[in-house]
Amino acid sequence: MPPLSGPQQQPEDADQAIVSTPYGRGLVVRSRKSDGIKEVSLLELESERCFASRSSPASSRNREGALDGGGRGRTPFMMYTPVDYPSVAARVGDDVVCQYGRGRVTKISRVACKGKEPVLKYSIAITSWRLGGRSTAICHVTSPPPRVVRKHTLREMDAHERIDHAKSEKAKATSYFSEKKNYQAALEKYAEAVDAVRNVQHDYTSTNEVRADLIVVMVTCSNNAATCCVKLEKWPEASKFAKNALILLDALYGKRGKKIHTILKKEGTIDAKLFGEWRVKSYLVVARSCIEEGEVSDALAVLKKARTVAMGYIDEISAKQQTCTKEEKASLKSLTSQVKEIRRLSSICLEKKKATKQMEKKRAKAMFGGNKENTPPVEANKEKDMQPPQSKEKGDNTAGENGIKPTSRQEEKTIPYQRKSSLNTKKDGRPSMEKSVSFSEKPPEVKEFESTDEESPWYSEHQEALIMLGIAGFSAVALMALRRAFR
Image (cartoon, rainbow, N blue to C red; front, side, top):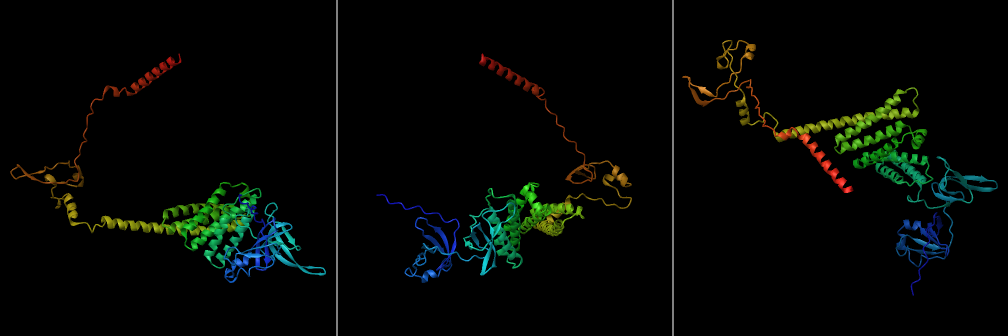
């Protein structure tokens, strides 16, 4: 007989409640409808691993249910019980489920009742459904108290929840950066915020406000993460985060005037801040990374772009001095400080470039012997021998070459060139075989050799006509062949 197949495993509960058990806080993973058994993961036992060594299978049973996993070292610690344990007390920040839906506890207060003891009032921000725009539904619950449930994982979150999660991580990172000066912890939180909204799957519930918030969170967290990397001197990571912000800003810049840009502008994120401050901040981080990695030319090109962007918005705001808003004045102040940083980095780049050129010159001199003092004596003698002999002048009675006596400088220029023979003449007038070499300031004029071309063949003059004649003949033959084919 074939083996009997067991029933299919029931999926986990959508809202997994956190209940209070005899072993501490427990998470109801699954409620089986077939037999009414609840599978509860014991959270506090999982955090205290030493309990497994001290427990025994015999002592891990009670009348309400059975404990599995602790005594035999299995994880997680599971308890199977039919008892419906009560929910743990809700705290601020817990995810809860009430009669109005799923939400997050924002405030807990005590409310006095007539003739009764004060009761707790829970203020809950509903997340399972939302109002239009950026409005959030807040409900106040006293009885029955809300039931605490497990927080959604990043994979289970929708676009709204992801953005809220990223904003909370950003707030934590800002606290680490500004107050505690813990740049590594701040970098981790900023990176988590960026990862939370990196691959958001939009659906019909994703409004334009949600998309605008997504861009703001991505750009600000990327720039802040890049700043943390600069503090930690992690230059490749800093450049990566800054370029990520630039990609988003460039994409939004191409869609100016559309819905998302209009929403950001209405909420106070002006162009001078969005495309000025934030973009220049990214450019500065990229430039610093290039400088530290030795890419001075790339750094200068990036700084040139940053200066162009900053000066454009500075001139635009300065043109309307009397009608400037508070946001524009704040952006003007920030952009002015960024321009100073651009100048400082540009001067550093120019100094590095100058130092590199000087180093290259020194290397070239060391390799090829550029110093005149180090010139070998043999070459110096050659240069001396190649210089033309200078005639000694003795007042007005001094004679030039070939016995010609110049009367003045003007007369020296008018003297025709006379070639000196390479054979020395003896006293008796006969030429001797001893050769002498002399140099003159005016070289002899040499006529270029005029070559006579041979007669070209007869067809070179009529080359174009012959080509046209050949094409015409080929066309005629092709036309006759087509006529015969279609007869």
